Length: 327
Image (cartoon, rainbow, N blue to C red; front, side, top):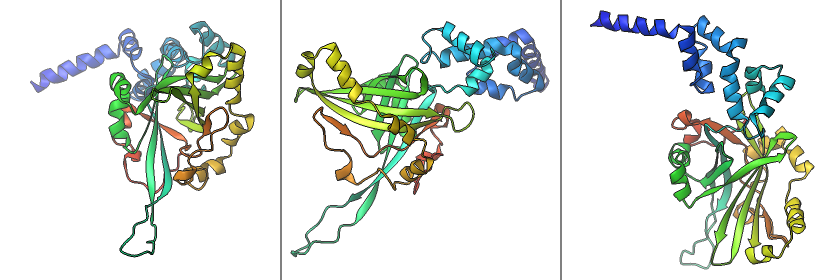
């Protein structure tokens, strides 16, 4: 029996070494597995890494950049003009929105415990505690965006966020869309979701502006929060606005160029991750609303880290940490 098993294994390996069969298998592998397969042997590496593997990486590029490019012809044009018609180079050097996992940030703030009277008029000393919570973003290829704020760790939230049906049924998950904030700057992403409040006749819209970057080449694994804004809108009042007024209103909420440049201050990002800046106590969580019903959030702005689905169960963010530096 062992000899038969060895013969079967040898036969399978022989088939896999046939170029046409291997190529068909490689076409069906996701990028991470394709890179892993290139480490198996020199022959596979040559098949995956050489110029002849154009069709393998072209398919992944067309899928990865469909959010940025209106049509596959635009992806082909950019590859030809900017990356010397090398799709593998394009895949690794051009930032892309990752859809194969979650972007997660760990946020903290200090909360004072309530005062307690113990049979005396004197007020007891108020101790404080550190509150830890997480922001979760999931992006879909069709332009949908799921977000959730929760004290639960990654391994728990993954079950809801990966299942579209569960995510849509969970009232704590905001469902919206994402788009480029500026067509010329692919790293600037605008995420938006809305929740209706029937009892008040208002709808609260959440706006997130984030800057996409890669910590290592081709990873697209960091989202720096530039601005987080809540806008309370009266639906009846919006109905009387014309298109020009609506466009002007939307323009007023956009981040300034100074906001975008602030995320390049890595010392400030480091302090923010430590909770030393822009993470106040509970009463200072929001700015006072202006005449347009806008509230600028001042905490929960830590950089989001990308975690692939297969790493969610054992990722370090599942552990109790004093602080977490995203890099």
